[in-house]
Each structure stands twice: as structure tokens, then as C-alpha cells.
Length: 254
Image (cartoon, rainbow, N blue to C red; front, side, top):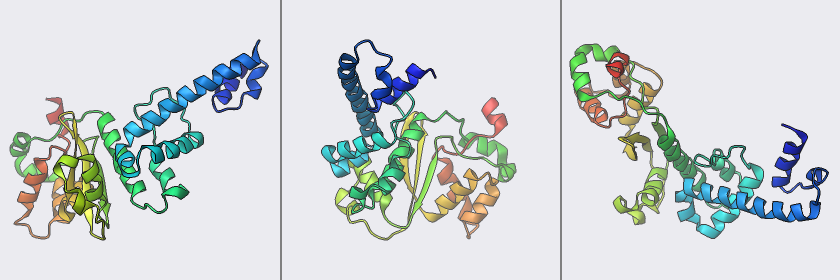
């Protein structure tokens, strides 16, 4: 980066002094830079709102805009591509003093971020019912893994209910979700046929999928998740229908 480019970058953050030595008309350029700086900031605020719509719903546009402005001052970002802008916003919110009275904001922001990551993730061939049937008993030794878009969560309170009620309002009971309480809940967010979906998970489902995420063979994942061997095939069939298990290498290449 040249001296000019470094000075220009600093000027976008409001530090115009270093840039003045490169300019013929510093005063006029300062005015132009202020307009440009405001345009850049507005673009980042809009991108952050688009990537965290659940948080916008929860706090309102004015509160979110003020928080987003503080965030971009702390973390302006260094990429001109704003589609995935806002990584780290959830952790930042957890330390943002005005958000302390709303402990659900940061975890819900993590779920919003997971939705964006699932949307942007590379595609992965998935294990189909037909492929599983062909593999038969040998499938137990296969470490399937998960679709690259898959994001797994386990909470000891009803964050998934609250997030789903805002993110997918047509299919959720908001009045129930707002009564957030201590209750263990799992959530899976992933992309299925180009559509990002979210599913609540019970403990058995979460344990199985987490074992797959860690590279465990399917047989080991079933043993970890299901104490009753009679119910194992039903659990596997249910999760296979999610279309989130990655295909075997030979299946993906055929």
C-alpha cells in the first residue's frame, strides 16, 4: 500500500490530516470525503441490517442503526464485498453496554450469522436414501460428515424458539417464543436445495449430527445418540431425510 492509499484509507475513518499533503485543494476534498465517508458508512449499516434481520426486528431500526454505527467504527471491515459483512457482530453485541438488558440478542445474532454462512457456503453432495440402501451394513463404517452449510447449536434456554419466531414468523407462535425460559433446545441451520432451512433438534438428533460433524462413523454416531438399538434405524432414517449428511466420496463422484 502506498503512502497515498494508506492516507486515503485513514481518511475514510475520519483522519483526514495525513491525506492533506497529497491534495491540491484540501478543504474541498475534505467536504467530498465527508460525503463519501457517510455513503460508505450507510452502505455498511444497511448490509449489517440485511445480515441480521432478526436483531433489527427485536430492537427496532433506530436502536439497530445506532448500534451498527458503533460497530462499524470499531470494525469497519476491509472488503468491498458486503454480502457477508458483520462477522464478529454477535460477540461485539455481547459486550455492547446498551445490550446488557437483552441477553438474548447475542445468541440470536449468532443464529443470524449462521443463516448467512449457510447461504454463502459451497455446495456438498448429500447422502441419499438410495445410496444408503445400496451401501447396506457397510454404511455403519462410513464417516459421512455434514453438508458444508450445516451449523449446529445447543442451548440451555429457548433461544431457538425466540429466533425462529422472528426469522420464520409465518410458522411460529411468537407469544410462546417470547416467554423465553430455561429449556434445552438444539437447532440445525443448513441449506437444502438452495433454500436455507432451520430445524429444532432433540438431544438424540443433535448428538448424532454432532458426531458426524466431528468425523465419527455413522455406526458410532448412532451408538452415541441412541441407547435403544431398536430405535436407531428410525433415528437414522429421520435424519437422512433432512438431506444434511454428506455423500460418500464414490457416491459424490458418480
